[in-house]
Length: 180
Image (cartoon, rainbow, N blue to C red; front, top):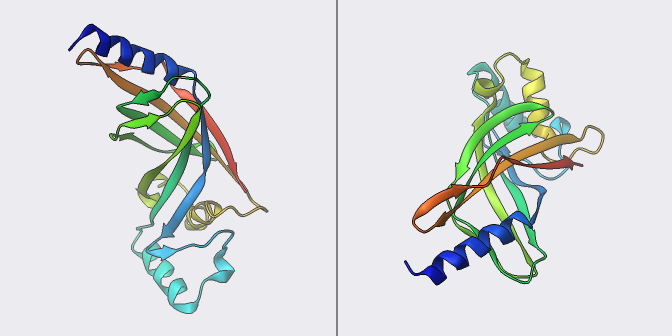
């Protein structure tokens, strides 16, 4: 690897540290295989969907998946990049999961990029001390119910390869968002 390549990668690390991270929202929310529309609540479910949700509750399996839309704004005159990132996701101050996004991200100079992060979890396993009603309510909060907004905290730690070595951003970046 040439010295110019290492300098270029170091520049991208510096530019990444100057970027602004924001949760833009969530998309494609599904609970127990039921796709939830924006601002949807339990009263909007049809009979078949209610039966499907009830079956999931009796089986103590509440699979929820959605895309968390992470926006990275690069206000700099040079590109920023990362090879991967670790993350921790909290909803209403409850840690929901930890994970890794192993795809490289490049954000051009003076642009922003929205990255859909595919999130999959089973609320029964994650929040086993909560009531069934609380689990279902939490899943519906992801649709953006204005009467009961969800507070999201996404902690991200970007990594970049420099000179063949992977370097971590020092600490986690805290990205807060209210779904409403």
